[in-house]
Image (cartoon, rainbow, N blue to C red; front, side):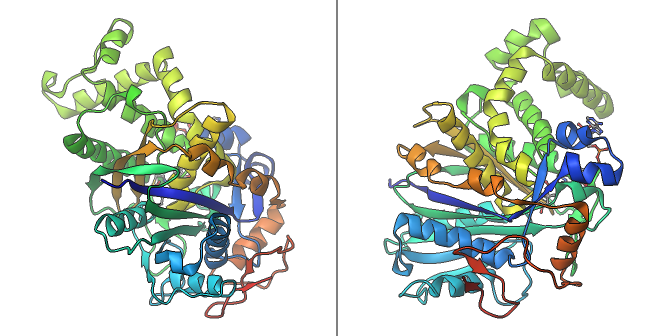
Amino acid sequence: MTAVGIDAIEIWTGKLKLDLPETFAPVKDEDPEKYTKGLGLYASSFPDAHEDIVTMGANAAYRLMDRKGLTPEDIGRIDVATESAFDNSKPVSTYIAGCLEQVYDGDFHHANKGERKFACIAGTQSLDDAYNWIKAGRNRGRSALVIATDTALYARGDPGEATQGAGAVAMLISEDPSLVELSTEQGYGSADETDFLKPNQQFPSVDGKRSMQVYLARMREALEDFESVAGDTHPDDFEYIPFHTPFPGMVRKAGLLGYRHMIRGTDVEDELAEEIGRQPREEEYDDREAYEEAILGYMDELKSTEQYQSWYSETIDPTLDISREVGNWYTGSVHIARASALRYASENDIDVTGKQLLVGSYGSGAQAEIHAETIQDSWEEEINDSTIDEQIRDRYDLSFEEYEQVHDRHNHDKRVELGDFTEPEDEFVFTGRGEMDERT
Ligand code: HMG
């Protein structure tokens, strides 16, 4: 059977940076370590005045097409995943295609375009749609362009304000991919939840603490569902586990939950039994509350074992390097976690060809999806073509007052006039809603 998966990936970060410990913490009168150690974040990306979800998505997509030597005829599908859309009818993919058509002779008139919405998980759902389209043989030899693009803003003063971010990830989904092949097996955990939502509003109404519980509950269900089709998982099965990363502290909790689940009934649980005992089993308890308390105690012990800490630092921590510097990119977040891990492997000369990733996507509202990926032969060449390090380094460092102006600029209800902080260079720029975004 032909392998289908991600052939290429390009990332575009919003060109402005808010430093959390240096700039944000003092104004909020908070200990900087709340951000760096607690949430695990150092900075957030924001779009410059000439950027928005269309320009960021178009710039990532153009860079990808240009690098791979593609023309519009090679693309049979453009799917955009976003939860920052400004148009309730016309999908963002049409705006992005309009931008790209300015620089190519051909057009995308025979490509299927759409927009996917389910909070942050929509990026992975678009990936799945493209995978299914190719597997069904409807692609006529063409590839799909999947673009996850978001400006993750919270109301000023909201506890989520520290976890903002903005950027786009463009992915090329093809037969015989260079980067990763997707597994046919998937697991889902899905339920109607109201902890994070935006009914006709730009900024989320969010119950932050509850959203973290919902994330973990859905992720556990998705893992169980995945195992029901793919068989039991073991922590050593996976080189890296990229999770949806609203902030790295969330993934710290997801990693522990995943590990505890995966070691149940395995050699690892046996090895740890002497040090911390075996995991409590539900059938050993008459009441659920007592069982849950015992599990929390067990997890506390598990967290401090050397075995867990070394697994975490090898399998999870490398997925967080980019996120720490850019914040939450909503639909793009799990895809920068994958890129971060592969970049780490390359920088540290770790040969991961043929190794497995377990990818945990999540979207509020709420749904988690788990699938596996197999790293392909040309992964290193592909990941090293990304310019994310330079992009992160070159961002303009905002003062707090400038950050507030930028926030107001991207607030759909305010849209204040604001000059650029960076000079656009060989890129698409925002010229106004409903108009074509021009390339400089
Ligand atoms: P908060 O109440 O400001 O923070 O908001 P906190 O007081 O809970 O502190 C955060 C952590 O820092 C805690 O660690 C503290 O102990 C620690 P934890 O106990 O959780 O391990 N801390 C410190 N550590 C070291 N030194 C210190 C210090 N002070 C505190 N001095 C909250 C945190 C996450 C609630 C907030 O940022 C928020 O509401 N965020 C938005 C919602 C969110 O991101 N939820 C995540 C799950 S839902 C999701 O991922 C979906 C999403 O991406 C949207 C979508 O799908 O579309 C959001």
